[in-house]
Image (cartoon, rainbow, N blue to C red; front, side, top):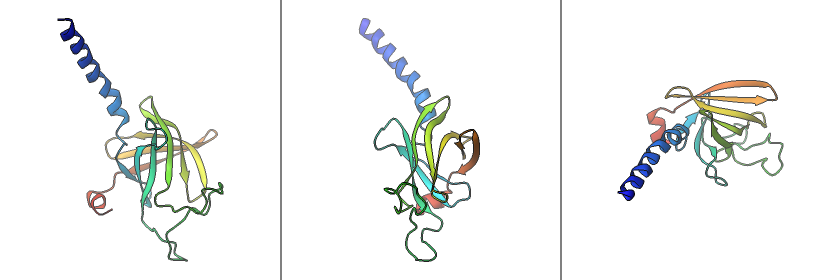
Length: 155
């Protein structure tokens, strides 16, 4: 009888756990188009800490530099170790943790400005992701969208 009760409690605990785990997992394994559709970012656990969320650029609307015809690189990065790396494949979203119904405490890098921002990621309905980046107390939000089915299949 004791083992049945223990199994019951364990089972109840397993059912209670996924509620918060599912809330924090919507981005894991998904990709989203940035606000103007210039890039697609795929989300996964961070390679250095699997409990944190990271996102990498997996597609660009214009992948090649117009002047050189070569794949675009990160020419504006202020970090000399990261400057010049290819945009496709680079980690753009780093080290977010799940707290209060959103991914928080991480940073997002903008290769068009070379700047890194503190940010919050929050799903806003099924098809939108609200990305809020801040510098000090000034914040700006973008709405990212899920790629269309045909884009998912070909990219």
